[in-house]
Amino acid sequence: MTKTILDPASGGRAFYFDKQDPRVMFGDIREHEEHLLTNGQTIIIKPDMVMDFRSLPFDDETYNTVIFDPPHLTGLSDKSWLRKRYGVLDKTTWRQDIAKGFSECFRVLKPNGVLIFKWNEYSIPTRQVIELAGQQPIIGHRSGKRMQTHWLLFTKDI
Image (tube, one colour):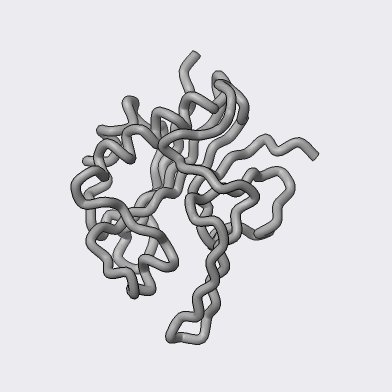
């Protein structure tokens, strides 16, 4: 089956119904990690392909759909369970990193393709991140206990 969906920062694939979905190219900058959390839960990060969302190894207009769920936290220690689960953004370069990530995701997206973006504004407000996308989302939805997780949908203009 051809992979028509890209998730370049898939981490532990937490929100997937099928964590091995053959339609999805699961990527992450981390090659293979397993972490046992204090609650007994094991997190496994094992992408199909190691990749950096700031420099994707694909041709232009390769994917119909891109799911972009980058790290959203800054300033976490190496021992933090949040870092192990979600990764971490650099405090000084996060704006450039997220902007480049959006640019790369739109580059590999086919015309009229869909970009689904997930962001938790615990460290950085969503409005600051949307400014880095280069365009406005079409729709959005807040979720979570404190309504800090945002799901946004963009399309690639022709």
